[in-house]
Length: 507
Image 1: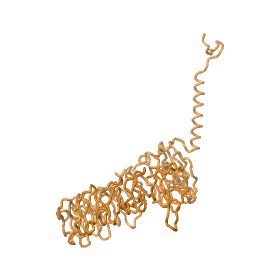
Image 2: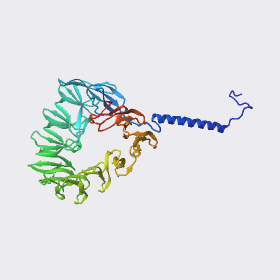
Image 3: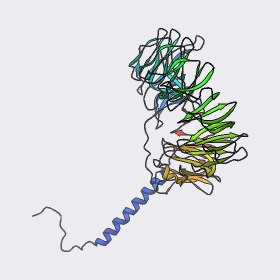
Image 4: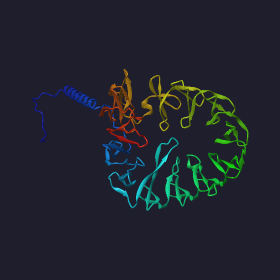
């Protein structure tokens, strides 16, 4: 006989409809409770944003440390000098300590995210600084400058020796990645980021021909003669000329010989000898030249395409050039047709997006012109992201998103990795999730879209604070940030004023 419970014949049968009704009612109550709980915690319908791990210098109480992209303290703030992080994706932190400002002495070390010293045996260790054309600071990747007994060498981020400490000086070639100047006995050479020699140290000077290392380097010999050495160590232009312009295009170089400018290639062919005073760019067979203080365009064979009569000419794309006449800018093609009339005070072409930005000094808005030379949009550019393929433009006091075909998009369409999306109602800002459900009520005077670390910045009563990727308050609005050119938070930390230092603070 079964030991299981049984119903006696005298018991009433269960009313299954009522049972199901009770179960459903309980489920609804539970769901409502969960929803209210999530709403109160700022988590209704939101997921935590996936964030790649990165490291940043942090400054608090007059000390420096390191945080990660979640805002967690990785290196306790206890250093008096800023900690340098050459690559934010790697736990390689350069710390300076025991600084004597009177004697100009200091000690340095490299530690990982456990504060363990990972490179030893050198007197000093430094990151290799470099600067772009706008003078923004960056560091050479996976290479550090070390010294021993007054001589310099290179190691990688793991401490592997790339160059022995036998050079008088080592520095990055300004504006060019993966190109490092070495100096020995007052002569210069060049190596790459793994220490491989590109140019032996035997030249008086080495300059970049452009910001692309593939275009080669201008070298000056001890006899002051100049030439070009390519990235593969070949002599692209024989070292015999008076001067070489920092211009490269389609295998051609601009050189001066016997006080006369000309264009040469690596095979020794010569073009346009004595036909110009200077060259601005070489684009295929076409050359933007300066002659008698006026700009024009001629071919390598000497055919005039655009008469040299303009204040300025800048190559844009295909056969189109930006020109300046009577202090006004427009666009002209190689047929001489003025496809955009010279009515603008400023005109630039963004190659990555294929868009002209045209400004007039008396107009607040920028005209955005497409490759068909028609105005597609007018507004104030707030942001442009060539990686994700969108731009954010303020149009009639509203921020709108467009792709590079000038098609209007929603923030959800362009910011696909976000969990919160900025929304506006009755002149106040709040946030919705990807389904359009309000996660953060409309209570803020100003706010930003979610940053790549998952945080949003919100402003109320003149003060800034931050919310996390679920809309939960992390820092109540309490910072004025009047001098900040970029308002951004990672956890409780906000971006410091000096963007070049790339640091965060809670002060």
